[in-house]
Image (cartoon, rainbow, N blue to C red; front, side, top):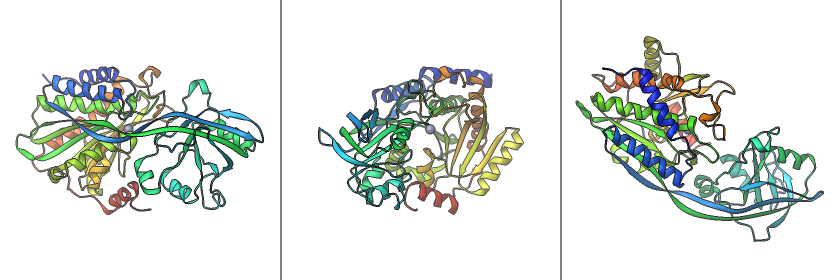
Length: 424
Ligand SMILES: [Zn+2]
């Protein structure tokens, strides 16, 4: 007998509960989660393997920021992973607030400590490095955050940034402290960072169910299973990981006409490292891929279904029509989605992203509240995305003729080039 959606959703939610723990790139917990996903696939009758890849990694042993003039105060900071170290006693530096780091903000900043708004973006970092500051300070959170209710973010200087523009001393501060520093007119600071950089090992979990009629046409399901610091990553993205596990169960019980792959990617949060590693190591297999189906974020009770296609407008119309025919409420659009679908689209494989976005203020990512204990996710809501992914997948994977053209529009190609920093 066909299982009901409720049964599938409740089972997926149980697995979500088991895997809701912090799973940062290259950590022991990330490895543990990979092994649990592999064991679950095998329990469901599909042999799975783990492929490792190197990911830049490191630890920060000490990070300090002290204002010396016109007042004296030490602020809590984190050093970026892969930050340069200062001399052991730190650097005494003039302090400048450089807002969004426009060239006008950066005149005369050489050798100084500069504070910039929020997160250091790629293009901002390019401008900052040209100005040759001695230290870069960003901030996270909001100015009304209570310290005991929030965590001071730990960030990383990504390889893409350091490789293109070199490294520097980088720190992260709370937004409320950044506000105080600027409002009180900080002029001179002491910055101390002691950091060690090394290569870590991250993992992708992989398995396959061969197609009965068109084994050489591959549809690849993907979901990242890593999280960021302080976050259990239930919403982002163990929710998507357990949804594709249900797809594996379905296609094991109902052999697909086309070959289906299941990939759980590590280190997505560090710049899509798992899917980039996979597409690089398996370039020769990509020509057989007709579609990549990515699921990244699901399960908030208050939310809405979003389908983001990275192919052509014709693909979007097809999917939108299917949702209407099925009576599934999902907004379908063509756009880039910042997830593991990008490396596939970059290699010419059309990709589709299924997600359930939380309504405003009804879901949290990349922080401690991405945790089932906060009560905004449940099995029924998880089932909504699961249902849509399942109905869509059954149709396309078993279609007599594959209904989606293997083509990426110029608009999406352009967005991918910009996303991957090949174009401004
Ligand atoms: Zn995600």
